[in-house]
Length: 85
Image 1 (cartoon, rainbow, N blue to C red):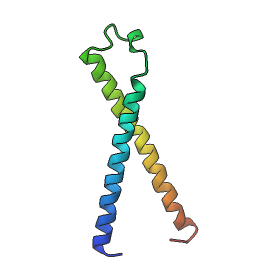
Image 2: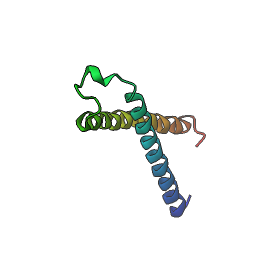
Image 3: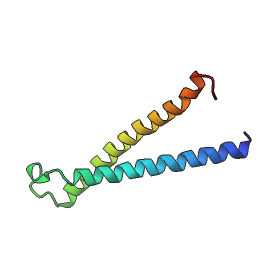
Image 4: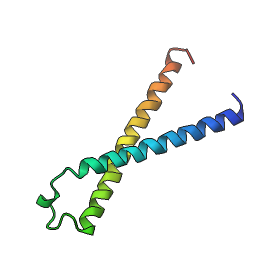
């Protein structure tokens, strides 16, 4: 594997990670919209409440993406355990 192939692989890995992270943030945002925020906020559609929902979506989505990407890397590294790399 040459240097160009290695850099290309790293680039594709970064792009995949970005799409997974942004996708899970979007999914989390949609799921958070289902929560009844009127029980927590006096004005659930106010900019402050929406900003908190956005921040929660970013934090939860990023944590979930981190878990999934770590798991993906772990499973792809298992081939070295069995010597079929």
